Length: 563
Ligand SMILES: Cc1ncc(C[n+]2csc(CCOP(=O)(O)OP(=O)(O)O)c2C)c(N)n1
Ligand SMILES: [Mg+2]
Image 1 (cartoon, rainbow, N blue to C red):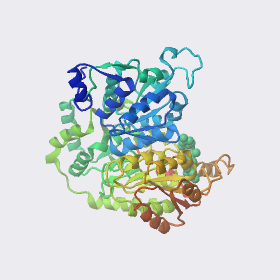
Image 2 (tube, protein in one colour):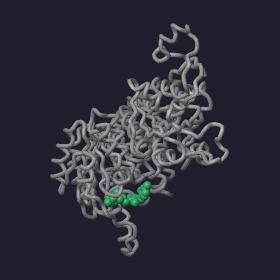
Image 3 (tube, helix red, strand yellow):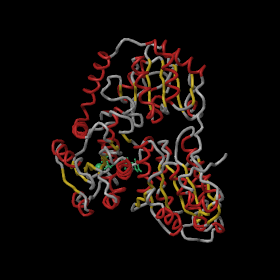
Image 4 (cartoon, rainbow, N blue to C red):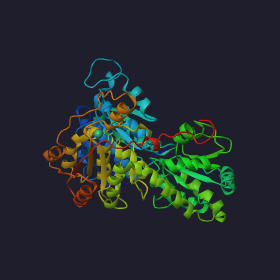
């Protein structure tokens, strides 16, 4: 691998002194320069002595890269995750070793589960002491081993000359195959070590396998012949929305998304479906085209049989066979593969299913009307949030319902935590999304339980003037847990009732705008006010009672074959 030197950062002053000779830089400076070359504009971070040289390098480059410091390492990591999800571009966070790394680890785990490109820069104890168990500040046994279980690409920068290439390799790894997070460790003494450096690498090209023409032809043939095709989309389809839309239109195939695929096909299109209607269509389908999704619900709940041919498009070559061998697998980025399918299917345009699908959507909406309290709140949120505004879901009653009935219009405007479904991810993730997309309003919802996981980051929102709007649905409980205890455990309530602060006063004490909304109508007015604010966060507390269970629409019995 050859690193070339773009003139932008190995600046001409140095060249004029030394011709094309090496320039002396510290490891930290080389890392920061390489981040900049890779388009990173922000490092979300929490400092400490192990990383002082890194922060000093960030200080010196502050005109080209911003440092956003948070109040807990999980906040930094979730912010980087939110920024990555909202922009589709890799993002970076930096933390000290040991407790700093572990504090950020739930967010790193979530980034892994969500295939999100988040690069963590993690400090280390002095290089010579690593592995000796001497008890250095923040020492943790086998930090590299722990990290290697959390992400697919990780490395330690062992000398300054490795810095640029390892950063470039981390970015390439994050973009190659299944996307995902990466981690680079660096010892506290190594960050500051200087050495002559020949070059800072320009980005390395990501591995992109060619489209398998034969498999694509076969897939197109099967789709053309299918009587009841269904397209299922996950996060891997987020950057192929136009292609999915065209294919769905030609085949008149419904497009099912649950969490990570929402927004790929506009919810206003009657072919765009969520879980419960998706299950009905799964039961009828003869061909399923799965684009960038694990198909987890289909395989684990709804069932498969011989009448159903599954075609997988996935960037991870191992994914298609995890549950069951598909009829066909196409490996690579969804966009070029779908383009190739479209090329073969152009002449197979089918008659419109609009009337049928509208009727089925109406019937499903009347079943989902059971979730009335959640639906009413979601309706006013949708009415106030602009089309390209971003909704950040949480593990709370209105969040579960949003996955089933919140209309989503565009890719990357519905951020949902994927299979980790980890309580408390929402607020700090939304803060990162709002920071990275200051051009659109971001709306974070939380329950009273989840919000206090990262609510300390209200201080970060104030410090960095991030105008995020947050709605906290306060039922005085880990409501989901309490309902299960009521319904399935003879009302033996344990560890599910909560004592809360006054959320309005709490937010105001940080300097945020805050108010209480006691009905959907009041929420609508409060949101309208909030979305007009440009540099101050808003919290809206919504007191609520117990809400109807969404689970009958999420965990549903099989509709076909063997599960
Ligand atoms: C990290 C993590 N810990 C615990 C859980 C289990 N859990 C799921 S929902 C829930 C309660 C959520 O309470 P709240 O945020 O108030 O939302 P509500 O259900 O009351 O609307 C808990 C504890 C989880 N999903 N993730
Ligand atoms: Mg609650």
